[in-house]
Length: 443
Ligand SMILES: Cc1ncc(COP(=O)(O)O)c(C=O)c1O
Image (cartoon, rainbow, N blue to C red; front, side, top):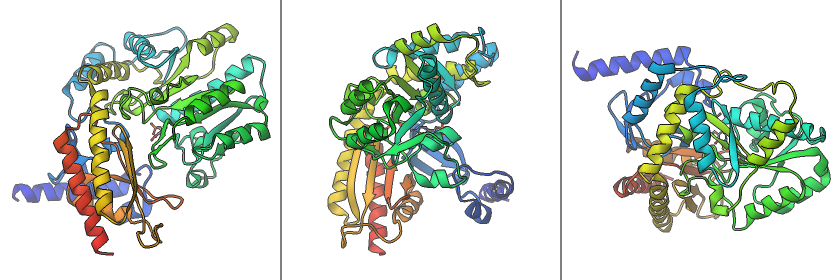
């Protein structure tokens, strides 16, 4: 067998094992059973990943919006190795602690806005959401308001997949998959401050614990708030004694051209949720950051044990990797690069929109962007989403993108690694334009 044949038989073998034994998250079980995984990735460098057949792709989504500092960073591998050799893991229940978890908490307190100062660790974004919902209920209960339990979130918002985060998610197919709506979760229109006011008036502020939103909606199609929206939201929450939770799981760590997207709006939430870019996906970690005030009140009022904690809360290796990751974001000025390259990306989208009839609205904030597909004749939606075809054409040409196709949307979203340069942006735009034209010309 020559080298190509060896590669091909290795791939066939893995595809078979994958089909039989690996249940893929957020996947079509049937499709996976029938055709297996078409891409099995084996390595990555910078903004590119390579699959088992040796084909190279520009990762236009940083995988799941998270590989912020790009692939193949030896510094993170070294940080993990050094910590694993010293003390890979030691639990942080009760009064046990470890140095990377302490140092990272202090670092997060330093870099998050305002007086966000105290950190509870999780293993990812869904756990951070669930933790926040429990902590706000705990907070109000301790303060003598046990009826303040409801969580208001937004339509099209995405917060994760455990039962709490699924319930806060404002995309109904997620609720319907396994009848997973927990009681006490309410959804309001995405950018309507009026809808929030009405919801509070209807339910009563004395029953509402918190309002949660992503500063820029990600999985809901990269929806960027209009001017003044978040300032008004902050005001409404403060006036009604409702805690404001910002889910910065995607938007944190430079994704939108600021270190945290709340900074665009000069709004400080009461609680900030972090994950993904905190380690650039090199290892699992999430965090719930509370204001000094809430932390102080909880500490003063809490008696006995606060019965909430994950085995991996404050995982020493994950925290050491996060510290190195943040150091790289700072020293390589990746937040600034995200802002500047984000402008290039948006310019590229706008050029495509001017040339390609099936492209509707385009938008980006930093390196978080979206291109909507529309039917140019009816100036409306096609009967079935077109973006999956565009995604296929992009993949053929070596670009990975993601499509959003629920509730009538037909949108392509983008979140390339923050290390992307001008030439790579041009490559992304070139492939996207060609793919859109091919799909348009075959309609
Ligand atoms: C805004 C937001 N919150 C929470 C989550 C859930 O994070 P995880 O998948 O790490 O549980 C995601 C995941 O995409 C997200 O985009």
